[in-house]
Image 1: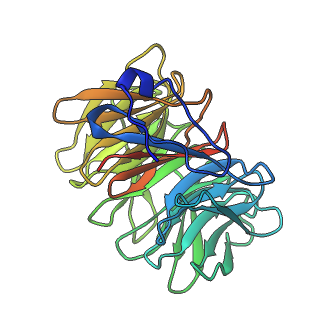
Image 2: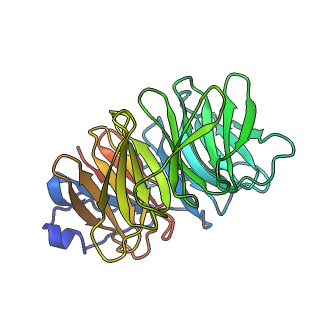
Length: 329
């Protein structure tokens, strides 16, 4: 069942049903938003989210130590235990169609095969301090790169299972990470307020300074042209670096004291940003340089990651234990 509303009604008439499909709400530009309450007996601490290959979506259950799987067709949720002390942060789909997680609790990378749900744990090298593992991305060779907020950038060579770790330039702060269509890997430092490109041969990182000082670069994402989009937590800016032209563009999000947490670029190069101060999502059209605001239907949604697949932008509401999708097709 669906519900078509005027835009004003749509952004205020939030509907959420425990374990069942919420009614889709009509948004601007023929888009709809739909939400579900996670049907679990415990608080998961949902953090990041990623589309699964079977039409469901995975999420990192940071509080309970699981990989979560949610089925939008039925509202069903499954939890896969990751190991003693697990506290996963990031989750992405690998080239092998498995779920790959950064697990701060185990100081390890975790792979969960799908649909067999086989769990493999790849610990950081012996003697590595607590890395506070954050997020991961696969490069053009199929190897996994990851960040650790305590001051580390690392690599898991998937064919051998070998994990290596480098200390990051300027110490603590590595946060978001992404790969470009060419297979290059970029990451950003929240505490250091910069972005960096990884030399995939040596593991070293080269810093690129954004134009706004102390902006708090939190997450990064590449568009189809290899340009790096940055959500700036401290400044409330959305910025874009063009590595080929060596240029920057910067746009401040609308509103009073915006806080830009996550950024994602969809298959049509539409840019999406989660903004915490006004509890909203924003889309950004780089052609018109205009933002479109989509208020979230529950207070303090706290969307920490954005990922999607064709026609769908998925959001984990860490503050409300909901999952939400914006359909753009």
